[in-house]
Length: 245
Image (tube, rainbow, N blue to C red; front, side, top):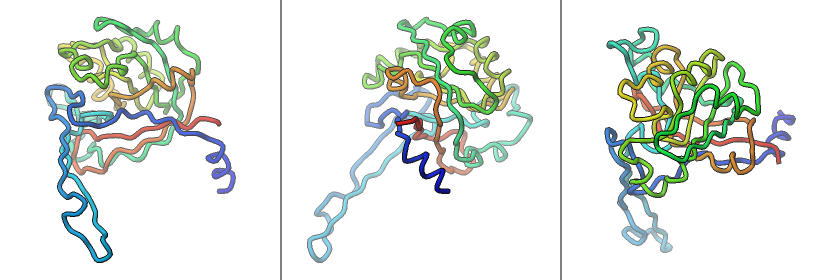
């Protein structure tokens, strides 16, 4: 235990989540994030002048930085391995503590694609079975401007070939700083089907990968946990990278 605590004390945390705010980007098929004050300081005052404040939030499970569960996509009515939604609910996904590998493959235009060859050219650390792979397209820099980020559902992303290259290596999850991981528009969402339905690989979207890129950090400990929402197909996520001081 002491050895683990010593390692943690020698590490620093890099936040990989985008901020949540009213008016933030959201995929049109999912509800937007909303927040309202429900109790202000002074509304109810305890003896000694003590009061509290609280708010109400409403959100979709696939809005903001989030993880797709294996129940998010089906093909011909079938989920991964023919399982039921109850068997692949996001509440059954355990906290994620795994090795992370970062690929920095920026694309400045909406029609930019990231192929397997592009990933291989940008690779600075080996990919191993069970890893979480994070891919920066650079699109996350638009996060504060919802219209520019959503961009009428046109964004750069990975190709099916790139997804296949990663899936053959047995990765646990693939994440990116765009809204769909794959290049969109994608009429049949082939990357989602390949990863979620055919291979049981989670997808993480709307990440903030700018600090990893700025510091050229290509290998780290990835830590995150989805909310235990019974039967849900996805969940908001607060991921972070642990790196040496």
